[in-house]
Length: 187
Image 1: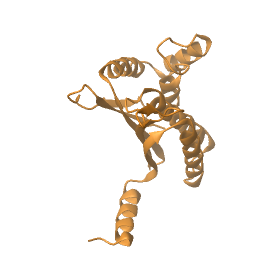
Image 2: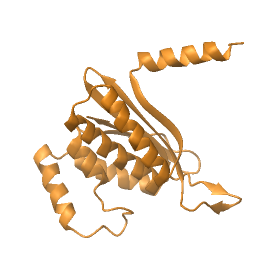
Image 3: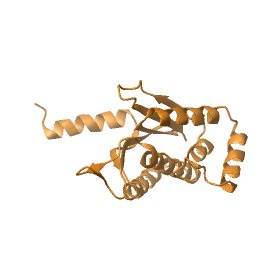
Image 4: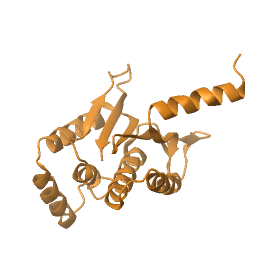
């Protein structure tokens, strides 16, 4: 059996080999996001990221974490009741390779949400950077979409700040239709 010290050393070695800057898996709430955002900001400063990169990493992190809070199919319940404020399950991690940051998130979604996300992200991937910026400005002036739990700016913000098109995948649906949504942004 491994000692605690040995397990820690193995985990630390894995994190170092993968250039992991930040990692969290669990339930997300606004309070947890605020605390993680502060940690992400400090880690980005510690890794020597330029101010503009730190801003993009920070805003993209916030948007991706907010998407987990708003759309994850795994809603935390205590004693059969949804917690207030609501908490939803997901994961986020950030890696750094060759001066670029890769922001990853994952969370469960139902089939209907998977279809909406796929449509929205495929459309975003078809746009140029200028078209993304124009859509962002237009969305700022528009009313919040009826099916949105935010201002509808989340993916546009991440796409605007990314240095490459957003990457996304969905796991194969389970028997109940649930899928895991994976998103990666390059900053």
